[in-house]
Image 1 (cartoon, rainbow, N blue to C red):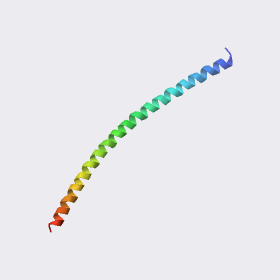
Image 2: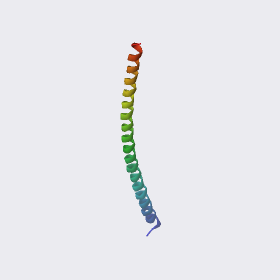
Image 3: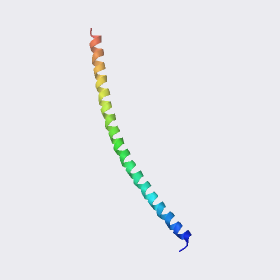
Image 4: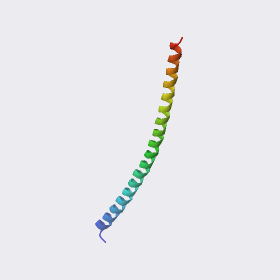
Amino acid sequence: MPVALIAWIAALAFAAVVLAFCSYEVHWKARRLRADLERLRQLGDELRRVQDSVAGAQAQLARLGASD
């Protein structure tokens, strides 16, 4: 078997391994980013609740201050 053919086979095998690894990395990172996005959505919901609570408390303080 000529050396060039062996080199091509080795290069193709190496390329297949690299592509498989890249595919795994992309899928792993996509799963991780989806999980991070869900946590950020939950934090956003919590932040909106806290903002609403603070706005309510601020309005109540304004009413109490106006009645003095």
